[in-house]
Length: 500
Image (cartoon, rainbow, N blue to C red; front, side, top):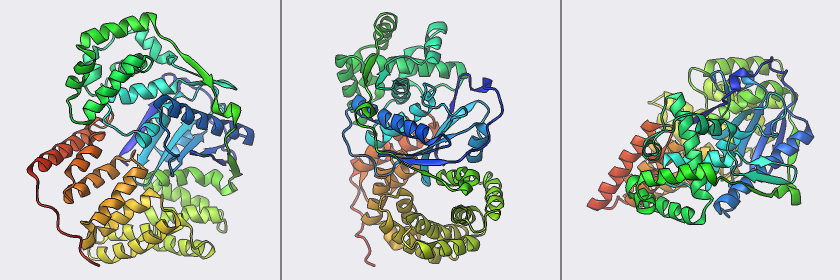
């Protein structure tokens, strides 16, 4: 699980009162999202419309006109920390998180009061802004802008017919007013600080810098040139000074801007004219007890957390031995973390009623992939069986990126692994889920094996400025440097792909 972001509310730990009882789950699907919520149908429809309006706002803000991504973002609105902890063992005060792994991508936010969507959704909107940036415009952004853009976008305020944006978060504004700022030299060219007070200032100043650059046409054009220079290999400091001069002059300009020139904008909500199409279904009673365990498996479960999850799923499924939903969740839990033979039998039973179910076919593949990972002597045999099931799963859903990633893994015991075909499979998986760093790193390694050095360097550059994982950023930078050096030496072309 490479990428998991905790989002902590400044006053999150002060929320009082016991968590409400778990209620019926509803699943709402719109053009870009699959939303799970325990609110009423009318409220769920409002929540889905707000998410779609926000995504349309991000498109207008960035000029993105690409078609909707084929993999819709899953969003889970939970009631209290106890429900969050079914998915992750989150620290106190955490009100939500986003995670992107080779297993799946999802965002989770606390909707303790059932009133989410009334101005308290900044945490989730911050993470959706990150998701959007990497989905549609992955680039070698500096770390401060990755956070500054999300901070700028997350303060969008939704009225019944309008949306306002550009106003500061009250928390960030308080830091800018009452604390001694970090030197902008540090904000612009160093990794985000870890000390809580410095980190809070870093976020606030990153928001201010993004506001300063994005709300003026001239500065915005200079900023685009700055990003292009970074993307083509210019050092960030050199690229910055080419466009904006010395840092101290830039800093003085921002200080003046903060005192005199801050503005915000108001526009029409997309849903005010044409409400988005939203289909809502009430999930079965078994989902009340099992949905969040299923969500945890969707994004991947830590090894030390798996026994607790498995025990919980087994206990709840045993109360509902004939429930199809419970059987499905239990099958996944057994395949991934328990008795694979029991999971296999449950999958076979479920597939008899739905032979083209992409998810069930994928887990049949996972049954053999997991067995091959644990048994080196039988790995080649199991991986071959896994490929057969992953192939069927791909035919059922060609956009399911975990299937593509796992199929490529199953080829590691086959001579065809070092081939253009495997490389294209991994590149397609990365195209579908550019937020998943592991997919990018694996694709880059295959590009290097195939002698595609420029392409490898290009996809690694965005990871080299990762703001929350210095070790990942360093590994990506080292691999990008290796690709650049190999490209200079013009190594021989790779051997032809073996025939089957």
